[in-house]
Amino acid sequence: MTTDFKTLPLIDVSPLLEKWDDPIMAQDKGVADVVRQLGQACKEAGFFYVKGHGIPDSLVKEVRNIAHRYFDLPYEEKIKIKLSATTGYRGYQHVGENITKGVPDMHEAIDCYKEVTKGMYGALGETMQGSNVWPSHPPNFKKLMEEYVNLCTELSRKIMRGIALALGGSPVEFEGTRAGDPFWVLRIIGYPGVSPANGQDMPKNDIGCGAHTDYGLLTLVNQDDGITALQVKNLSGEWISAPPIPGTFVCNIGDMLKILSNGFYESTLHRVTNNSPIYRVCVAYFYEPNYDAVIEPLDECVKQTGGTRRFEGAVYGKHLVSKVLTNFIY
Ligand SMILES: N=C(N)NCCCC[C@H](N)C(=O)O
Ligand SMILES: O=C(O)CCC(=O)C(=O)O
Ligand SMILES: [Fe+2]
Image (cartoon, rainbow, N blue to C red; front, side, top):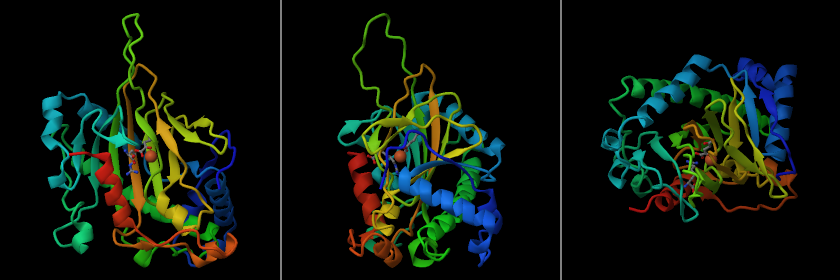
């Protein structure tokens, strides 16, 4: 249920992070306050900023910095880790290779996923089978990104406990067979700046990433400071900017949480346009259900939304594969 929000709320999650594993966390006043804010943000916008998240600012910045240094390399160097079906759609994609609603996006990226080994998940696992492919330059790229993924996974698990409480469930609603073994996705994205058009208007596609929803539970967006490019659609169809706020992540809800909440929460449409002359980097981390999880509306959410189940069960891995196969046409 998205509303006519004009700005996105900012939530300090530190009280939740202190008590996240306490069975009676819901009785804590600080936790209850974070839970109320999360619930309101999820209901009204499906997007919010998070501060007090505990991931060192130095690491958050270094991750973007090393991404800039990779994208600065010559094409021949970057293409050494080319994304293809044989790597399970992991690796580098050039500007225009990722497609959103049939239109090529003006971004380049490295896509990474939790490893899927041969035979894991049977036929469901085949498309995404593979291990990540990492560049050898800049050095330390893999180590830094893996450390970052681990911290984002821990943080997301804790925020999801708060969201579980906000939905009226138990704090561990999203553990176990739903998301106890979360599939994760990391997209290291670069959006070229607009070049001065020699006095002439050059007709070109300036959409860095077309309007889309994210696929899983929760996204953590780590974006460059100083450039406003991400926009979120509100109920009247206006595009509301999500400018960078130093020290925060932009968080948003994915399709699987929309189903779990029986539509009480929306996976909000968003898009990216880099209108600045400066190259923009965003590192987006996606916290998703177990690869083979069957995702259905929670009973509690069905009750709260009038008693009718609005969605059939969806297998998360199937949803991901259907997206990946339309994002890349090989
Ligand atoms: N894993 C996630 N959520 N990736 C988001 C990419 C959005 C663009 C993609 N072409 C699309 O149309 O979905
Ligand atoms: O670049 C951004 O700010 C967001 C990217 C995004 O929405 C995505 O990769 O799903
Ligand atoms: Fe997105």
